[in-house]
Amino acid sequence: MRTATSPLASDPGGGIRFTVVGNAGNRRVALFAAAVRAAGLPPPRVLPWLDVACGRIAVEAGALVRIDSPGEDEEVDRRFRGAAEPAEHGRIKSFAGWYRGFRAALARLDDELAGTPGVQVLNRPDDLAVMFDKPRCARQLAAAGVPVPPALGPVAGWEELQAALAAAGWNRTFVKPAHGSSASGVVALAIAGGRVRATTPVELVRDGRDVRLYNSLRVRTYDDERDVAVIVNALCADGVHVERWFPKAGLDGRVIDLRVVVIAGRPTHAVVRASRSPLTNLHLGNRRGDATRLRAAMGERTWATAMTTCVRAAACFPRTLQVAVDLLLAPGWRRHAVAEVNAFGDLLPGVLASGRDTYAEQVHAVLCGRHLAWARNAGSLARPAEPQDAVRQGVVPCTT
Image (cartoon, rainbow, N blue to C red; front, side, top):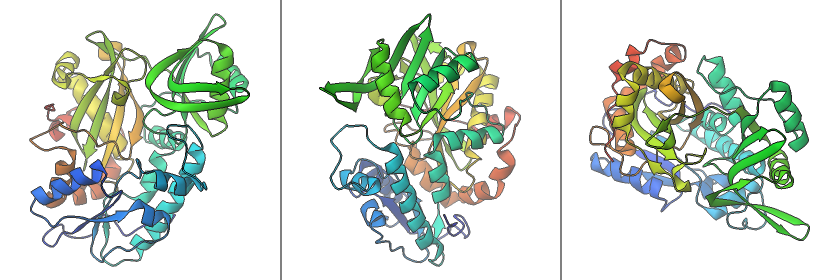
């Protein structure tokens, strides 16, 4: 993939004109457009992902380009997968195929951006490709000294996974599709005393010899090894990232983790995700916890250390304006680790910091020129730092 024009090469002064690569009518695009208009700027032009997927790419000279999620559009999904027909709604099928199509679309977009005069790119296509490759992203974070859960190498199926877990001495693990998102296909697996327990939003449907997997909003538990083997084998065929289970801290009777949005090097918006299952994604029926209360429970120094880790994770992608970091917190707040870095994890409706949502904060960062400083200085942050650095950056407790 070619490198597009430096995302932050020019003065962010007058004449700013945004272009959003996204799906027209999508709520993400609408929320960002609202933030742009509220800042007194012209409404952003939308370059549809479908056009990008089909090679119809046109970006005006001097545009400030934000690449948003290609999700929630069945035709775009079909194009990425190279399928003749749209996928059956909710069915888990070909994460790897989708990722190949996504990368190809990013490469075409990158070429066009690189050849258009004066374009600034707020999130580099190469960075997005890495964030959608869980094993590669985890290696990149670990190489920069960012704490991540230990991971196994590639496994081909259930029997190989069992052998690898036994060799590593792990009895609890998370199996994640290498190119999945939003907990799709994720399995929290526990093996003890010859018994197996898999917690997952995957719905396993058998119809004679036909076996299908579906995404579900209901978290299920499977304790029949035959069912678990079918699910794991199907996921492994598409590529998985297997990481050691990181014990999560609890608050108010639920296990928790943090979604932290880092914008131009500042951890601005933090949401506590609280669950009664090992899976904390909010769309699975979980709820938001109290970030201010969590911060008080952790203490300022421990909180600052955690936020510094989020900044260091973001600094692994210095030419990307914003990322969302999923941060795991251990019981007693003794340690933490980065579970994932999300390219499009800034959709946090109703979460405000300094009176701004995540989209308004990104526009504000551009208008203030902070995106320029981030691109220049982020490389020096992708290494261990003192906790007080995050205090200086000043995360504002969110208002929900």
